[in-house]
Image 1 (cartoon, rainbow, N blue to C red):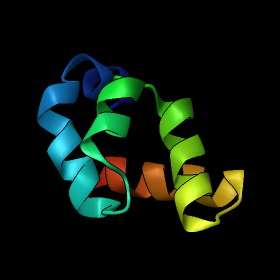
Image 2: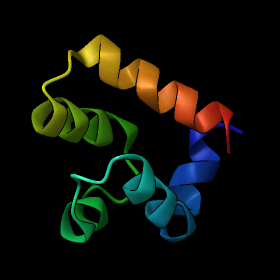
Image 3: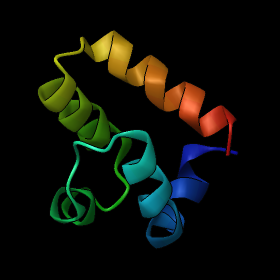
Length: 65
């Protein structure tokens, strides 16, 4: 699966993203509307990760869905 599919079906993937990153709120996930860069930024902010760590987590998550 590629990110364009996730972004195009964000309402379906939003719940899965919240299961993966529970510190992210529904409002935050609604606001980013599936944009990968903004998701990485939220993960960095909430979990104290580097940009590279956040991007790796997103890619790992994407490969499982």
